[in-house]
Image 1 (tube, rainbow, N blue to C red):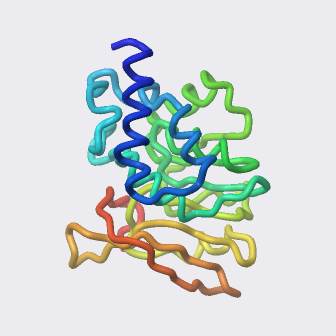
Image 2: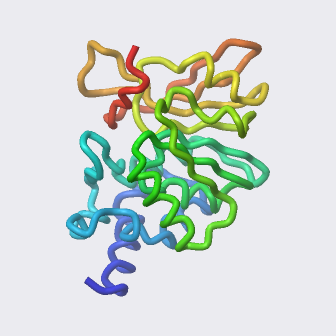
Image 3: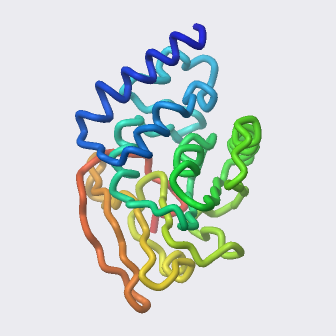
Length: 217
């Protein structure tokens, strides 16, 4: 497979998967057209890179299908002056996209190998407004660089931990998929607005993505 093939496939992905899902943010669409997703997936899965499927990268961890990520990021309303934390960043694809939309983005993952790959990918693309860290427990977030304007959890959780709310600025927002134990399939992508020490939930759409085991109660 050569560069022209991937360029056409990337354009088709945006045209046939992303835009029909009502993604409106022009800068986000441009980032999806420009960021080479093939750099972030295992070589054995190159034939799936621009398909509408999740891509397994480690054990039970997947790179979420791009049109779902696009729908999520479109709801995040990122601003140019924002500082963002991405929890469960895998090989760094979502970090690369978000880096085009904000001032600075931090990523954490609990898989040392994936963290090393993400750092290498970010460095290879010369992305200067991004840092990646290994954290044994994803639910701990990244306290040392807090507070954040927004936190994006790349996976589903049972509950947003109180300690992550403390890492948000006042009126900060957290975005994730909430999935109950009783429901093995569908979760709800939500926005949580920090209000005082609590959280106000707004639900956007149903979807099914990886459960992040560090967040299982």
